[in-house]
Length: 120
Image 1 (cartoon, rainbow, N blue to C red):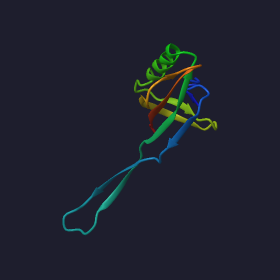
Image 2 (cartoon, one colour):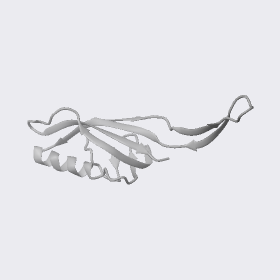
Image 3 (cartoon, one colour):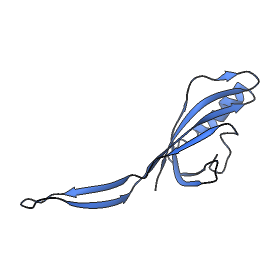
Image 4 (spheres, rainbow, N blue to C red):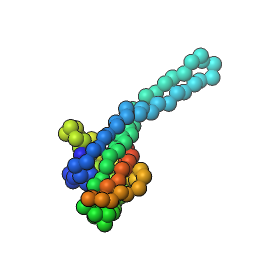
């Protein structure tokens, strides 16, 4: 999986859940007339959720990797490419969170979750 052309997440297990696009609409009612007029305002955004494991040779290296990922929570849109090569343009990283604690042995690793918004 690549974000902004970089392999930020390593080679560990990664999954990406892509939700459907959200549409916006407005309904207008008029006095004396039955029913409503519905106006479709078009497609808006969709949410994406990425989960996986980060691994590094040490806890310090893992912390640097997490800082680099967190740096993308800046409101800008980037390109996300999943493991199958499917690209998602104009993706904004909304949050990055650890799920549990960091474990260390031969290598440091932790489970994470990232929430994105694709801006149409």
